[in-house]
Amino acid sequence: MPTRIQAAVAREKGQPWSVEDLELDDPQRDEVLVRVHGTGVCHTDLIARDQLYPIPQPIVGGHEGAGVVERVGEAVRDVSVGDHVVLCNLSCGTCRLCLTGNPSYCLHFAELNFAGTRPDGTQTLRHEDGPVHGSLFGQSSFATHALAKERGVVVVDKELPLDMLGPLGCGIQTGTGAVLNSLQPQAGSRLVVYGAGSVGLSAIMGAKIVGCHPIVAVEPFRNRRGLATELGATHTIDPTDQDPVEAVKDLTGGEGADYSLECVGSADTFRQAVDSITQCGEAAMVGAAPMGTESAIDISSLLFGRRVRGVVEGSSMPQVFIPRLIELWRAGLLPFDRLVEHHRLDQVNDVFRGAFEEGSQLKPVLYM
Image 1 (cartoon, rainbow, N blue to C red):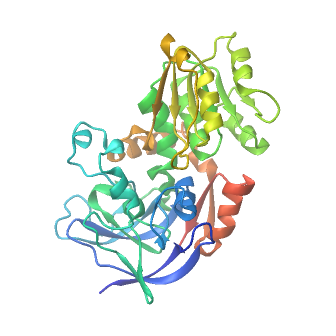
Image 2 (image 1 turned 180 degrees about the vertical axis):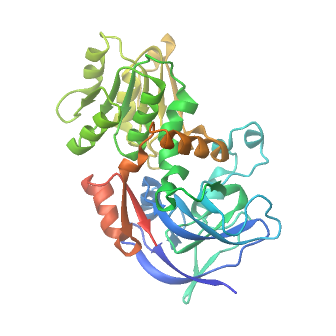
Image 3 (image 1 turned 90 degrees about the horizontal axis):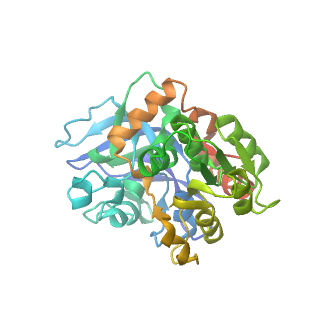
């Protein structure tokens, strides 16, 4: 029988989430049914609500879920009922990029994570008035229960605080992975992070683990600059008070940073991130901008060995990287719990205002 759930639904572009009673389909052969304990709120959920990408509506949001497995399909082999799990994005596992260890860049990423249906096109959710799209990032976990493919599940130790782990599935692994997996700076490398939200702060924690110096955070909100300093930034810059490119050059003897990360999704900050790097430096775009956003850069500067790249999900293999992040947290090296605040599912609209309009929240987690 379908499972009766409560879930937060985005029904119209830019309108508040609606918490509704829905029916969730039975798990298919390769799926698991998860009772969700907590789900992180991420900028991609704002993208789904406000249609910055062409994601179908109505849709249940949420893609940083963690919970307990209640049912498994008959083809599931490595996940069992009762397992504690973190949910992550979906990849096909069979394209050439998946097979070469790059599932974050799966050739079918868009349709698997943004189509609002299973890979076979079927719906997983129903309201009494009709179907509701789900399967956002293979889960749609703004809900009391979620369906996920076995490939989109990472089993974790049962002793861990499950209601805190969901953000490892996207925001935390995106920021730390951009440093540890994508840029791979050496100790002593100079790094600047544009945007000290949860992704940027995760990148700063990753840079501290590596031993980067200086680590510069560019962030307009004072509270976020303060936390950036506590988590590893050696310098902070308020971009409303000074030109961040010139400030970065002043901090690096006029050269610029070896690495920069753009974690905002803005054409302007992307240009600043590129302009902040020295010769043979590398700028990485992590923030998700609206479709069609363009930014002009001085292409002659690229002739001097500068590199520009994009990063999705921290270039990670979630089944390997998420356990690694947990061990770093246990060792006291990745205190991502300092970013987390818990809120009830029915507070979802207040949470979105705090996180994306006021800047007062970093990594809200909705508990069920």
